[in-house]
Length: 267
Image 1 (cartoon, rainbow, N blue to C red):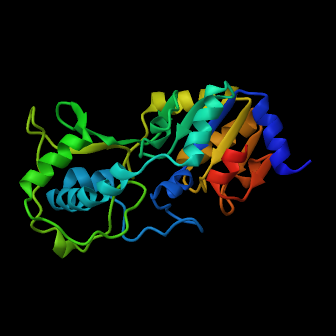
Image 2 (cartoon, rainbow, N blue to C red):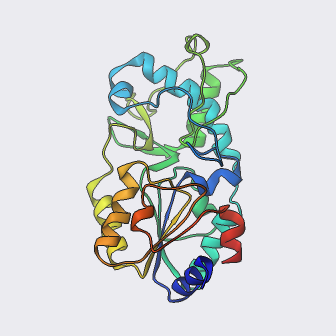
Image 3 (cartoon, rainbow, N blue to C red):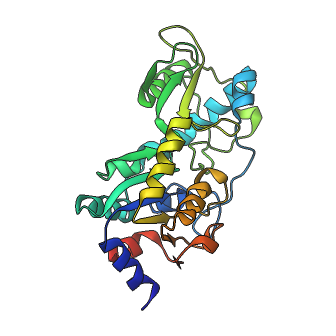
């Protein structure tokens, strides 16, 4: 029996929990962090400590993100996202845990989606806690920076775009409309913890799954890798579809090195 045939048998039994990473979104035009399907990140990612502690860091982030958001906003679900949603409608996928912040699983029609690292489609105020749509912030940043345009560099999966610092010096950042507090994308930055209730829910899902199906993640960071280890410890079979090796391969019953769109459509 081939790895694909074994995967089909496991999926057919139902109770599948999907754990997706940036690799599932590359066919939607959102580059991966690493691997053959995407470019390596350029520059240093924003940390929570830098963002909250430095006005210059916030200006740099919002200027870069104002450009990078365009890539996220225009992205549409690809066949991989659509296949996951179809498997869920057929009662085979019970939940989706995604490390992505692009909202493409929901756009494809998936439900029961846990956004492990939050979503770029929302903005939160660090003072009053109000959440607002990212589209509203984009309008306000555009109005506050008329004529501010520069050639967009390649965007990253977190909506950031690499720009030289001298290009952002004149960029104006806006504050919360309700309380004038600091605005932050509703995502988990480096150096910031995923909310414990969210982590606990993912542990429970991975422990009770009939199959943990990893899609497009190298599992390099602990944030997603821990659920693979947890599933394996509870004798839950793990299957991985990714282009290139992953940190979780040793825990997997099967691995398939192939493009996500065509493989999931075939599945």
